[in-house]
Image (cartoon, rainbow, N blue to C red; front, side, top):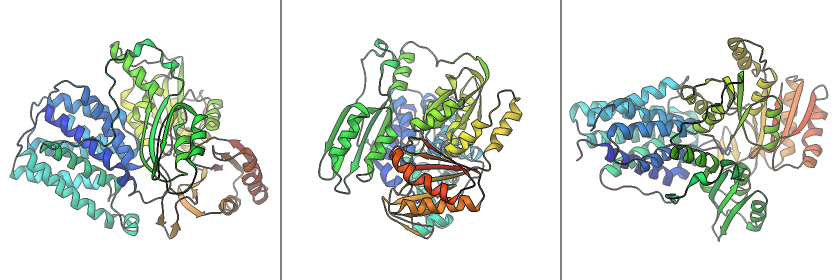
Amino acid sequence: MRHTIDGATFRRMVISAAAAIENNKQPINDLNVFPVPDGDTGTNMSMTLNAAANDLRKADEPTLTKAADITASAMLRGARGNSGVILSLLFRGFSKAWKGLEEADGVKLAEALQNGVEAAYRAIMKPTEGTILTVSRVSAAAAAAAAEENNCFESVLKVAIASAETALAETIDQNPVLKKAGVVDAGGKGYLVILEGMLSSLQGNDIIAAVTSEARESADFGDFDTEDIKFAYCTEFIVSRDNDRDPAILHEFLQGIGDSQVMVPDDDIIKVHVHTNEPGNVLTQALMYGALLTVKIENMREQHTEKVMTEADKGPKIAAPEKKYGVVSVCAGAGLVEAFRDLGVDNMVEGGQTMNPSTQDILSAVNATPAEIVFVLPNNKNIILAAEQAVPLSEKKIIVIPTKTVPQGITAMLTFDAEMEEDALTETLKESFAGVDTMQITYAARNSDFDGHEIKAGEYLGLYNGALFGNGEDVKKILTGMAERVRDEEKEFVTIFYGADISEKDANNMALPIFEKICPDAEISLIYGGQPVYYYLISAE
């Protein structure tokens, strides 16, 4: 029984936990009740914790304080999605509690867990019970009680895990949606897997990730410029073959969207490696064959830049201010990017559904913006928290405008007035999109029985302000229902953005005439968005 741990042990525990969540991310993703394709809890938690594991592997015999600090810093910057941000806050507790320590016992473990829970609850405006927050809180409380009885690190960790397991089982009854689906909370499950991975390492059974990337040890990254990297994202995935769709179609698509392509199909799966600037589009095409089993996306430009800076012992580049205000916006799709650029956005971060950018991605864009004050438009409810974590990390003042959809972000930019004072402009932007309704048409990523709707994988899903509006095999029926609601609510302006998988001809022959016929008093605009995942993205105000 291990009574205390040091820095080397904690380092192994975190690396083991990262491998555990990586190996279990797909089952955790599958716990997501709502069948819309998104960044997914397991994937986001894995990418967040593996950011720490990668940095810890480079650390040479760190002290306990140093190992905890490396973990907290890497996870803060690498946090993706709400689940990733909450996880990074929970691990920040280790850094806070273990300052100046060479070893940690059971009492210090309990203190670290409690500090993390407090940090997570402070960051969430409206904490929801039956989630990872509940599981971590109950687990930390049990650890504190156990430490009073037996100040042994391993013993306290075991109690924390047992309590987390019990709390996780109870999430079904705490959340009506989970209860109806008969599943536990995905984030809570991920947290339990991580704690179990840490215990496994402590007991001498380090977990190894099933899929690992090759180490780069001796290459000189300063030999070429970041701009020389034509395709930024190294995209690797394995997709199951759930239908008879010909892999040659995917092969042809990949040839036109990137380079360094390797595709290996067999009877059950297709394994793909490609360098591209449009990873979201690649994953959208892949999902036509079946469920994604593993996904890894790495920004090679960012990796190269960071490597060169590290080797040169330089800090991140901060653009000198040339104006008072700047704007960073998040979205995916060439047409949407152009729309934001035309409205005055300085820097874009590629991301959205299926591809939540990290806090570091957002921070880099902010730092590259030549302004004193930088407004950030997340344009996705699962990115807002990651954006907020960038606020204390930059020398520039960051103001996050909590836009949950791309149409909200576009409306905010339409009201942007650089002549206004900071407080007035901030309030104006936050109020600007209150009357914007967002409609989305995508596909069901999995079979589901949600809110009284029996949903089958692959069929169309219609969302209205984030809520399920309709589903089925007839997209025209869903579009018609949306147009009727827009008419009934007397909306005056409608903008239809058609996505990467919809041709201009199809959009002009279906979506546009439906809204023009049903909403004759509204001003209707049809624009190429090029967004992945969503066939149509519709704004009404």
